[in-house]
Length: 100
Image (tube, rainbow, N blue to C red; front, top):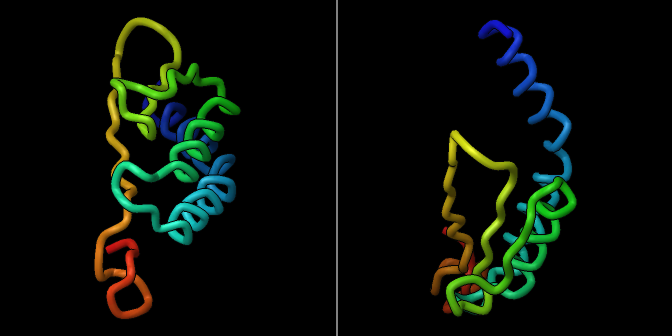
């Protein structure tokens, strides 16, 4: 497969997931959960990944809201850290939590 065909394949995969991923990001934004209390967000992300073929280890490393999602075997190995906890004084109202 040449580079153009690979790019086309990736573009198609991204477009197929775009609406669901956008909807998920809006839900996480609206929950605005505090650090180590991202129960709704982490469950939703894990469920989304599991629906797309990932194996989920939940909780992970003794952190109730952390999980590990794996897909396939071998190389390449890709890692990602999702940072989606809310921040103090970033919400819509004075002194509320939200996303920066």
